[in-house]
Length: 418
Image (cartoon, rainbow, N blue to C red):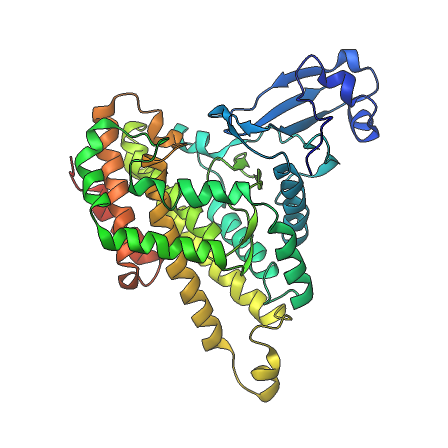
């Protein structure tokens, strides 16, 4: 999947190289000299360009052969664009209308041409700015439920699902980033780690907690070996774009087959971090906006459960929990569904807690905290986040539902830890 003819695009060369593509010219026209090209990639890995003309606009995304955040000292295979393309096509089929439309894919150049989302902006920026998005929780819950259920053997034929697992098993280097940065690096002094200096007492407490580290490795084992469904793999408020009323999910290059609860757990963590960071971003509207973020979490989970149960009853056509064992014999499968949802909930909460640690202690922190320049303000907010994360990993059994999760978040938000 690597090609010796690969050449990274620049704003100066993009028009010349893409003008021969019908998928591009039918949207921008053939007068390449009139195209406006702007490099907007602010993520950790890729080049991203907005290309516009009087006729239309597109996004061009190209993988780089290294981690952009670090530089060429950390090489990274170009084949991640291949897996992102395949992930987008599957997400579009499993939950239509939730991801950008793909216009063109060039495997040799690790390049995807896709729909330009406008006036959408990154959700994390909206949360920092105190803006609301209509029905955000409902959208996220349905998206997570549909992609999880329809990418599993609850829905897919066993042959199709195993073939897909085999395909995505080739995406080795990208999941390895998650395996290290998320599950392992926060709990020791890894080379690329960084953290707010005032957090040292809290960090020492976490790293001296043997049970916490054991559970983090238990969840790493699940992540690495449990191929229940195709996950986005990096679902957070930076991989969602929105207006006040329209939402899309982007950037699934970390896609792999993993536990059913992974995506919704990681997303919940990012909403909780947005919640804990708000005292540094809000004024008199602090309490009301924090309440809204918590309502998004509640709605996300209620929507996830409702949609998952609906799909269980209407699209359960795979080999798992077949109707031949339940409905066809006049038996209810409701308790079986309850059990699957309970397992998803417990996994998701533990993934959530570990992600809350990673984003403060490992590489690639959240802007929710990082944009708080005064570390004496930032550190106490991060400390609440870190301690709640530990609670989620270690005491998941005590949290029965989203209402209990929200109550716990309010408890930690009121604590003075530093």
